Length: 103
Image (cartoon, rainbow, N blue to C red):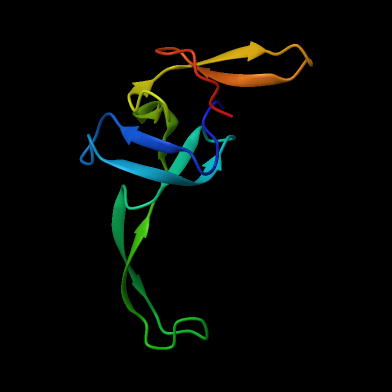
């Protein structure tokens, strides 16, 4: 997967299209990401030790990684991600719009 934890992404499709958020978790086996404040659902929680009062919680659920695009730090546009090998044999992610190194 080309999207990593901590990246800022833009949602391209679905009910939250056009919103930006930070990636909280990456699930590479399922090709899904969890984005902060995006794809929230209500979960009815019984009281337990961690949540003694219980109630209705709003939690972020995983969404397909193909529904988000990485935002470049330099040009601040949604971009596809390329890769490049530097002189010291280090592989880095590169913005396809401006050529800026993303890592």
